Length: 302
Ligand code: HMG
Ligand code: MG
Image 1 (cartoon, protein in one colour):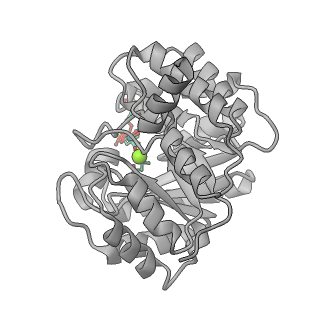
Image 2 (image 1 turned 60 degrees about the vertical axis):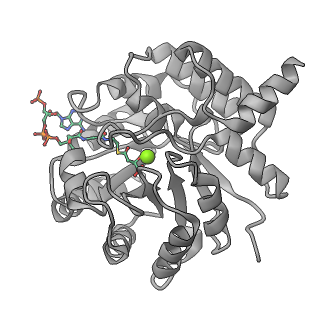
Protein backbone atom coordinates (compact mmCIF):
# COMPACT_ATOMS: atom_id res chain seq x y z
CA UNK A 1 0.00 0.00 0.00
CA UNK A 2 1.57 3.30 -0.96
CA UNK A 3 0.45 6.79 -0.01
CA UNK A 4 1.67 10.19 -1.22
CA UNK A 5 4.38 11.76 0.97
CA UNK A 6 2.73 15.16 0.67
CA UNK A 7 -0.86 16.23 0.21
CA UNK A 8 -2.02 19.65 -0.97
CA UNK A 9 -5.12 20.76 0.91
CA UNK A 10 -7.50 23.06 -0.95
CA UNK A 11 -9.52 24.95 1.65
CA UNK A 12 -13.02 25.55 0.29
CA UNK A 13 -14.75 26.72 3.49
CA UNK A 14 -15.10 30.41 2.55
CA UNK A 15 -16.86 29.37 -0.69
CA UNK A 16 -18.39 25.90 -0.52
CA UNK A 17 -18.82 26.21 3.24
CA UNK A 18 -20.38 29.64 3.50
CA UNK A 19 -22.43 29.52 0.27
CA UNK A 20 -25.01 27.43 2.08
CA UNK A 21 -25.40 29.48 5.27
CA UNK A 22 -28.93 30.77 5.77
CA UNK A 23 -27.92 33.97 7.56
CA UNK A 24 -25.69 36.53 5.86
CA UNK A 25 -22.04 36.33 6.80
CA UNK A 26 -20.60 39.86 6.51
CA UNK A 27 -17.61 40.50 4.25
CA UNK A 28 -15.53 41.46 7.32
CA UNK A 29 -15.95 38.01 8.83
CA UNK A 30 -15.08 36.33 5.52
CA UNK A 31 -11.93 38.46 5.17
CA UNK A 32 -10.86 37.53 8.71
CA UNK A 33 -11.57 33.88 8.06
CA UNK A 34 -9.42 33.84 4.92
CA UNK A 35 -6.57 35.57 6.81
CA UNK A 36 -6.76 33.00 9.61
CA UNK A 37 -6.73 30.14 7.10
CA UNK A 38 -3.65 31.69 5.49
CA UNK A 39 -2.03 31.96 8.96
CA UNK A 40 -2.64 28.21 9.35
CA UNK A 41 -0.48 27.54 6.28
CA UNK A 42 -3.14 26.41 3.81
CA UNK A 43 -1.62 26.60 0.32
CA UNK A 44 -4.93 27.14 -1.56
CA UNK A 45 -7.96 29.01 -0.22
CA UNK A 46 -11.07 29.24 -2.40
CA UNK A 47 -12.28 32.69 -1.46
CA UNK A 48 -15.74 32.90 -3.02
CA UNK A 49 -17.94 32.50 -6.09
CA UNK A 50 -18.66 35.01 -8.85
CA UNK A 51 -22.07 33.52 -9.53
CA UNK A 52 -25.46 35.15 -9.81
CA UNK A 53 -26.37 36.72 -6.45
CA UNK A 54 -29.98 35.80 -7.21
CA UNK A 55 -28.98 32.15 -7.27
CA UNK A 56 -26.57 32.19 -4.32
CA UNK A 57 -27.05 35.40 -2.26
CA UNK A 58 -24.38 34.46 0.28
CA UNK A 59 -21.65 34.82 -2.36
CA UNK A 60 -22.70 38.35 -3.40
CA UNK A 61 -19.76 39.90 -1.51
CA UNK A 62 -17.13 37.67 -3.14
CA UNK A 63 -15.49 40.43 -5.23
CA UNK A 64 -15.25 42.68 -2.19
CA UNK A 65 -13.79 39.90 -0.05
CA UNK A 66 -11.25 39.00 -2.71
CA UNK A 67 -10.18 42.63 -3.09
CA UNK A 68 -9.77 43.12 0.65
CA UNK A 69 -7.75 40.03 1.57
CA UNK A 70 -4.00 40.27 1.87
CA UNK A 71 -2.75 38.10 -1.02
CA UNK A 72 0.29 36.33 0.35
CA UNK A 73 2.92 34.92 -1.94
CA UNK A 74 2.87 31.13 -2.11
CA UNK A 75 -0.90 30.96 -1.53
CA UNK A 76 -3.44 30.59 -4.36
CA UNK A 77 -6.82 32.26 -3.94
CA UNK A 78 -9.15 30.76 -6.59
CA UNK A 79 -12.69 31.96 -7.21
CA UNK A 80 -15.56 29.89 -8.63
CA UNK A 81 -16.78 31.19 -12.01
CA UNK A 82 -19.79 29.85 -14.00
CA UNK A 83 -19.72 32.00 -17.16
CA UNK A 84 -18.22 35.00 -18.97
CA UNK A 85 -19.89 37.47 -16.65
CA UNK A 86 -18.18 35.73 -13.71
CA UNK A 87 -14.85 35.88 -15.54
CA UNK A 88 -15.26 39.62 -16.21
CA UNK A 89 -15.82 40.17 -12.48
CA UNK A 90 -12.82 37.95 -11.71
CA UNK A 91 -10.52 39.87 -14.04
CA UNK A 92 -11.74 43.21 -12.67
CA UNK A 93 -10.87 42.05 -9.14
CA UNK A 94 -7.42 40.79 -10.18
CA UNK A 95 -8.19 37.09 -9.63
CA UNK A 96 -5.33 34.86 -10.83
CA UNK A 97 -7.04 31.48 -10.61
CA UNK A 98 -10.62 30.47 -11.35
CA UNK A 99 -12.54 27.24 -10.88
CA UNK A 100 -15.10 26.12 -13.45
CA UNK A 101 -17.75 23.56 -12.60
CA UNK A 102 -19.77 21.01 -14.52
CA UNK A 103 -21.92 18.13 -13.30
CA UNK A 104 -22.07 14.47 -14.23
CA UNK A 105 -25.87 14.48 -13.95
CA UNK A 106 -28.23 16.31 -16.34
CA UNK A 107 -30.78 17.21 -13.66
CA UNK A 108 -28.14 18.60 -11.31
CA UNK A 109 -26.60 20.58 -14.16
CA UNK A 110 -29.99 22.19 -14.87
CA UNK A 111 -30.72 22.92 -11.20
CA UNK A 112 -27.24 24.28 -10.48
CA UNK A 113 -26.45 26.22 -13.64
CA UNK A 114 -29.66 26.32 -15.69
CA UNK A 115 -28.15 24.43 -18.62
CA UNK A 116 -27.39 20.91 -19.83
CA UNK A 117 -24.02 19.21 -19.35
CA UNK A 118 -23.16 19.81 -23.03
CA UNK A 119 -24.17 23.48 -22.79
CA UNK A 120 -22.08 23.96 -19.66
CA UNK A 121 -19.02 22.54 -21.40
CA UNK A 122 -19.72 24.68 -24.47
CA UNK A 123 -20.02 27.74 -22.22
CA UNK A 124 -16.50 27.07 -20.92
CA UNK A 125 -14.90 27.70 -24.34
CA UNK A 126 -15.05 31.49 -24.26
CA UNK A 127 -14.37 31.62 -20.53
CA UNK A 128 -11.26 29.46 -20.94
CA UNK A 129 -9.97 31.34 -23.99
CA UNK A 130 -10.28 34.70 -22.25
CA UNK A 131 -8.95 33.42 -18.93
CA UNK A 132 -5.91 31.91 -20.63
CA UNK A 133 -5.32 35.10 -22.63
CA UNK A 134 -5.25 36.96 -19.29
CA UNK A 135 -2.83 34.41 -17.78
CA UNK A 136 -5.41 33.09 -15.30
CA UNK A 137 -5.02 29.49 -14.09
CA UNK A 138 -8.06 27.23 -14.41
CA UNK A 139 -9.17 24.45 -12.12
CA UNK A 140 -12.16 22.23 -12.96
CA UNK A 141 -14.82 20.58 -10.82
CA UNK A 142 -17.10 17.71 -11.70
CA UNK A 143 -20.11 17.42 -9.38
CA UNK A 144 -22.16 14.35 -8.48
CA UNK A 145 -19.34 11.93 -9.36
CA UNK A 146 -20.56 9.31 -6.89
CA UNK A 147 -24.27 10.06 -6.98
CA UNK A 148 -26.87 12.71 -7.74
CA UNK A 149 -29.57 14.04 -5.40
CA UNK A 150 -32.10 13.84 -8.24
CA UNK A 151 -30.99 10.94 -10.45
CA UNK A 152 -29.27 8.60 -7.97
CA UNK A 153 -26.52 6.57 -9.65
CA UNK A 154 -24.27 8.42 -12.06
CA UNK A 155 -22.33 6.91 -14.95
CA UNK A 156 -18.55 6.80 -14.41
CA UNK A 157 -18.21 7.08 -18.21
CA UNK A 158 -19.94 10.48 -18.04
CA UNK A 159 -17.60 11.56 -15.21
CA UNK A 160 -14.65 10.39 -17.30
CA UNK A 161 -15.88 12.20 -20.45
CA UNK A 162 -16.32 15.51 -18.57
CA UNK A 163 -12.98 15.14 -16.76
CA UNK A 164 -11.18 14.57 -20.07
CA UNK A 165 -12.94 17.56 -21.66
CA UNK A 166 -11.90 19.81 -18.76
CA UNK A 167 -8.27 18.75 -19.21
CA UNK A 168 -8.44 19.08 -23.02
CA UNK A 169 -9.71 22.62 -22.56
CA UNK A 170 -6.80 23.54 -20.32
CA UNK A 171 -7.68 22.88 -16.68
CA UNK A 172 -4.55 22.03 -14.71
CA UNK A 173 -6.42 19.94 -12.14
CA UNK A 174 -9.89 18.41 -11.88
CA UNK A 175 -11.60 18.04 -8.55
CA UNK A 176 -14.03 15.13 -8.16
CA UNK A 177 -17.08 16.26 -6.23
CA UNK A 178 -19.08 13.79 -4.20
CA UNK A 179 -21.57 16.62 -3.80
CA UNK A 180 -23.96 14.72 -1.53
CA UNK A 181 -21.39 12.54 0.22
CA UNK A 182 -23.05 9.23 -0.70
CA UNK A 183 -20.03 7.42 -2.08
CA UNK A 184 -18.12 4.68 -0.30
CA UNK A 185 -14.44 3.74 -0.44
CA UNK A 186 -14.64 0.99 -3.08
CA UNK A 187 -16.66 3.17 -5.44
CA UNK A 188 -14.31 6.14 -4.97
CA UNK A 189 -11.34 3.91 -5.81
CA UNK A 190 -13.13 2.34 -8.81
CA UNK A 191 -13.89 5.80 -10.19
CA UNK A 192 -10.30 7.01 -9.87
CA UNK A 193 -9.03 3.79 -11.50
CA UNK A 194 -11.36 4.36 -14.47
CA UNK A 195 -10.20 7.99 -14.78
CA UNK A 196 -6.56 6.88 -14.60
CA UNK A 197 -6.98 5.22 -18.02
CA UNK A 198 -6.90 8.77 -19.41
CA UNK A 199 -5.36 11.09 -16.80
CA UNK A 200 -2.86 10.71 -14.02
CA UNK A 201 -4.03 10.49 -10.41
CA UNK A 202 -1.72 13.43 -9.59
CA UNK A 203 -3.98 15.68 -11.70
CA UNK A 204 -7.06 14.79 -9.67
CA UNK A 205 -8.42 16.15 -6.40
CA UNK A 206 -10.85 14.57 -3.95
CA UNK A 207 -13.75 16.88 -3.07
CA UNK A 208 -15.85 14.80 -0.74
CA UNK A 209 -18.79 16.04 1.28
CA UNK A 210 -19.28 14.15 4.52
CA UNK A 211 -23.05 13.68 4.59
CA UNK A 212 -22.83 9.94 5.27
CA UNK A 213 -19.60 10.09 7.31
CA UNK A 214 -17.61 8.43 4.51
CA UNK A 215 -15.32 11.25 3.41
CA UNK A 216 -12.16 10.33 5.35
CA UNK A 217 -12.45 6.68 4.31
CA UNK A 218 -12.92 7.76 0.70
CA UNK A 219 -9.92 10.10 0.84
CA UNK A 220 -7.83 7.30 2.35
CA UNK A 221 -8.98 5.02 -0.49
CA UNK A 222 -8.17 7.40 -3.35
CA UNK A 223 -4.79 8.39 -1.86
CA UNK A 224 -3.82 4.76 -2.42
CA UNK A 225 -4.37 5.35 -6.15
CA UNK A 226 -2.04 8.37 -6.00
CA UNK A 227 -4.50 11.24 -5.46
CA UNK A 228 -2.58 13.87 -3.48
CA UNK A 229 -4.92 16.88 -3.51
CA UNK A 230 -7.79 17.05 -1.03
CA UNK A 231 -10.50 19.72 -0.84
CA UNK A 232 -11.87 20.33 2.63
CA UNK A 233 -13.76 22.91 4.61
CA UNK A 234 -12.80 24.50 7.90
CA UNK A 235 -15.05 23.28 10.73
CA UNK A 236 -16.85 21.09 8.17
CA UNK A 237 -18.88 24.09 7.00
CA UNK A 238 -21.32 23.92 4.20
CA UNK A 239 -23.31 22.03 1.67
CA UNK A 240 -24.67 22.82 -1.74
CA UNK A 241 -27.75 25.04 -2.21
CA UNK A 242 -28.83 22.76 -5.09
CA UNK A 243 -28.37 19.48 -3.21
CA UNK A 244 -30.91 19.52 -0.40
CA UNK A 245 -29.75 17.73 2.74
CA UNK A 246 -26.11 17.56 1.66
CA UNK A 247 -23.87 18.58 4.54
CA UNK A 248 -20.47 20.20 4.45
CA UNK A 249 -17.24 19.07 2.94
CA UNK A 250 -15.03 16.89 5.04
CA UNK A 251 -13.62 19.10 7.82
CA UNK A 252 -10.09 20.39 7.23
CA UNK A 253 -9.24 19.62 10.88
CA UNK A 254 -10.23 15.95 10.40
CA UNK A 255 -8.16 15.65 7.20
CA UNK A 256 -5.09 17.26 8.78
CA UNK A 257 -5.43 15.05 11.88
CA UNK A 258 -5.53 11.92 9.72
CA UNK A 259 -2.64 13.01 7.48
CA UNK A 260 -0.49 14.07 10.47
CA UNK A 261 -1.07 10.63 11.98
CA UNK A 262 -0.01 8.99 8.72
CA UNK A 263 3.16 11.10 8.51
CA UNK A 264 1.93 12.80 5.32
CA UNK A 265 3.04 16.43 5.02
CA UNK A 266 0.52 19.22 4.49
CA UNK A 267 2.34 22.30 5.81
CA UNK A 268 -0.73 23.09 7.92
CA UNK A 269 -0.40 24.11 11.57
CA UNK A 270 -3.13 22.38 13.58
CA UNK A 271 -3.25 24.97 16.38
CA UNK A 272 -3.80 27.82 13.96
CA UNK A 273 -6.32 25.76 12.02
CA UNK A 274 -8.27 25.19 15.24
CA UNK A 275 -8.20 28.97 15.78
CA UNK A 276 -9.71 29.56 12.33
CA UNK A 277 -12.38 26.92 12.97
CA UNK A 278 -13.20 28.37 16.37
CA UNK A 279 -13.44 31.87 14.89
CA UNK A 280 -16.03 30.97 12.25
CA UNK A 281 -17.92 28.55 14.51
CA UNK A 282 -18.22 31.25 17.21
CA UNK A 283 -19.56 33.66 14.63
CA UNK A 284 -22.11 31.10 13.40
CA UNK A 285 -23.00 30.19 16.97
CA UNK A 286 -22.36 26.47 16.74
CA UNK A 287 -19.71 23.85 17.37
CA UNK A 288 -17.33 22.88 14.53
CA UNK A 289 -18.62 19.89 12.56
CA UNK A 290 -15.31 18.11 13.09
CA UNK A 291 -14.66 15.29 15.52
CA UNK A 292 -10.93 16.10 15.60
CA UNK A 293 -11.53 19.82 16.25
CA UNK A 294 -14.04 19.09 19.02
CA UNK A 295 -11.69 16.62 20.72
CA UNK A 296 -8.59 18.81 20.39
CA UNK A 297 -10.37 21.97 21.58
CA UNK A 298 -11.73 20.05 24.61
CA UNK A 299 -8.26 18.74 25.38
CA UNK A 300 -6.80 22.25 25.17
CA UNK A 301 -9.51 23.59 27.48
CA UNK A 302 -8.38 20.87 29.96
P1 HMG B 1 -29.23 32.16 -15.53
O1 HMG B 1 -30.39 32.71 -14.76
O2 HMG B 1 -29.50 31.18 -16.61
O3 HMG B 1 -28.29 33.32 -16.11
O4 HMG B 1 -28.23 31.52 -14.49
P2 HMG B 1 -28.54 34.57 -16.99
O5 HMG B 1 -27.34 34.70 -17.87
O6 HMG B 1 -29.90 34.51 -17.62
O7 HMG B 1 -28.50 35.78 -15.93
C1 HMG B 1 -29.53 35.96 -14.96
C2 HMG B 1 -29.13 37.13 -14.05
O8 HMG B 1 -27.93 36.80 -13.31
C3 HMG B 1 -28.77 38.39 -14.83
O9 HMG B 1 -29.10 39.48 -13.98
C4 HMG B 1 -27.27 38.32 -14.98
O10 HMG B 1 -26.66 39.58 -15.13
C5 HMG B 1 -26.88 37.72 -13.65
P3 HMG B 1 -30.45 40.33 -14.20
O11 HMG B 1 -30.35 40.83 -15.62
O12 HMG B 1 -31.59 39.34 -13.99
O13 HMG B 1 -30.36 41.38 -13.14
N1 HMG B 1 -25.63 36.95 -13.75
C6 HMG B 1 -24.59 37.10 -12.91
N2 HMG B 1 -24.37 37.91 -11.87
C7 HMG B 1 -23.19 37.81 -11.24
N3 HMG B 1 -22.23 36.92 -11.60
C8 HMG B 1 -22.43 36.08 -12.63
C9 HMG B 1 -23.64 36.16 -13.33
N4 HMG B 1 -24.14 35.47 -14.38
C10 HMG B 1 -25.35 35.97 -14.62
N5 HMG B 1 -21.47 35.21 -12.97
C11 HMG B 1 -25.97 31.05 -13.80
C12 HMG B 1 -27.02 30.92 -14.90
C13 HMG B 1 -24.83 30.12 -14.15
C14 HMG B 1 -25.52 32.49 -13.71
C15 HMG B 1 -26.64 30.64 -12.45
O14 HMG B 1 -27.23 29.40 -12.63
C16 HMG B 1 -25.65 30.57 -11.32
O15 HMG B 1 -25.14 31.58 -10.86
N6 HMG B 1 -25.39 29.34 -10.81
C17 HMG B 1 -24.42 29.12 -9.76
C18 HMG B 1 -24.97 28.17 -8.78
C19 HMG B 1 -23.94 27.91 -7.69
O16 HMG B 1 -23.15 28.77 -7.35
N7 HMG B 1 -23.97 26.69 -7.09
C20 HMG B 1 -23.09 26.34 -6.04
C21 HMG B 1 -21.68 26.17 -6.48
S1 HMG B 1 -21.36 24.60 -7.27
C22 HMG B 1 -21.01 23.52 -5.98
O17 HMG B 1 -21.19 23.87 -4.84
C23 HMG B 1 -20.41 22.18 -6.29
C24 HMG B 1 -18.91 22.10 -6.01
O18 HMG B 1 -18.62 22.44 -4.66
C25 HMG B 1 -18.39 20.68 -6.29
C26 HMG B 1 -19.22 19.60 -5.60
O19 HMG B 1 -19.37 19.61 -4.36
O20 HMG B 1 -19.71 18.75 -6.33
C27 HMG B 1 -18.14 23.05 -6.92
MG1 MG C 1 -18.78 21.06 -2.98
